[in-house]
Image (tube, rainbow, N blue to C red):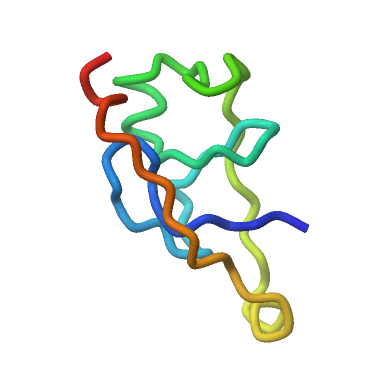
Length: 80
């Protein structure tokens, strides 16, 4: 099951579980579309993998399987 991390690792923008703005790599590194496109050029800085839209978990499933509250933030990524 996906962790659904709550923020962009690059700019720290909130990315709630229902966000259409979230993208992930195969390791679930999580970024907003703006950072993925404009800062990271569609390559994950952690694994060099590609990004895909993060699936959205249905609201009723979130009740039983909530999104993560573990924030990962690396402000050094913005300087790329």
